[in-house]
Length: 356
Image 1 (spheres, one colour):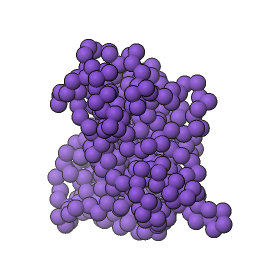
Image 2 (cartoon, rainbow, N blue to C red):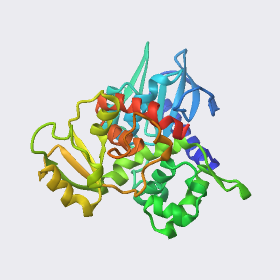
Image 3 (tube, rainbow, N blue to C red):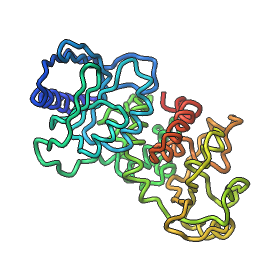
Image 4 (tube, rainbow, N blue to C red):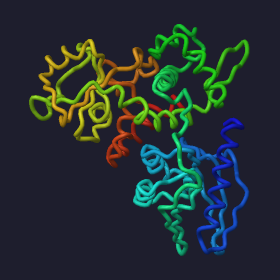
């Protein structure tokens, strides 16, 4: 992680600790930060932190967030059991609704407004409703984590080595304008995700962190813009024997996950296709438009979302299913516990080798 990110994190941490000291009537000591903890886990916390509250010493794995989303909460809930110490979310601001969600998911947190949830018996603290020191304005989202940049990141994650291809090839894979590739490459370098190796080209690094950032941003920044409509099927379970490869479409979300893991009974049917193929898909599958329908059809935003690395995997059906990263993102975005459990399986079986 680069110095810009460290400085931002240090400032949020400093303000959150100061606010906690002001808002609780307990003796509080904070030990030194331990950066880059070395654990054999796929999910790495930002740092480790020792806190002593009224004589009770606690070591936390911390995750620092400038802007907190529901997806962040789902992601932390999914990974917290993998860590050697309790997770402590340190945020710029946790609004009352988010505070309740964190409480319900047993994710401890502090923020710069003095809101907090600490549950380390006999220490129990829960404070919500404090306003931030300054009115929260519009969070500045880096260009790379806006819709077009997210398509660019997705292409890099799905296609290892793509960062070293000519810009024209990268643009074609990511389905973005050629002129944006240079900007996005520069953004990744500034954020510490891309290293210029001189004559050896570029190297995408910290891929798991980049994947986590993409998973957090995708459901809010990119996914809503891809929805082509909601529909109703002719009968329940119509999708079981239906193949989509000859209709220029792919299963996503719960259906794709069910086919991969045999663990889910899908409630939401997700299909990715392109607008020009939509009418043919609706006709062949006998789908009718229904705003409350269980079928969601989304634009297939990346032209080449398949990776040849998986072609020899007997558990993978390339013809009909979206890339595992996209399936994972669909599952996490639902917030459903069983979907999150299934997402863990897909991560371990298909994604970890791409981002480790």
